[in-house]
Image (cartoon, rainbow, N blue to C red; front, side):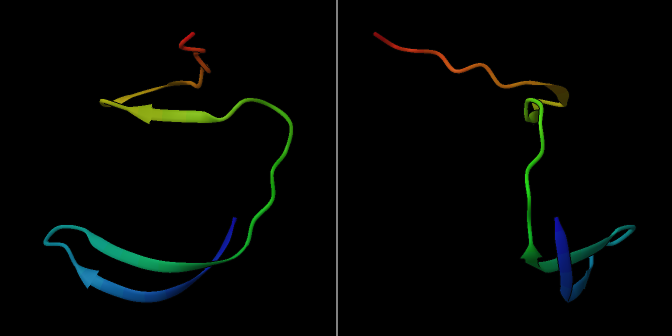
Length: 48
């Protein structure tokens, strides 16, 4: 993912950067998911 910074905001002890995505591509492998403070994978569930 290639981005161009659009705006920088003061976040106290952090700098918040708002950027515009200018180019994006995908590669092999499964997506990485961050949820509830943990990293994991994505599993599609079929609610039949």
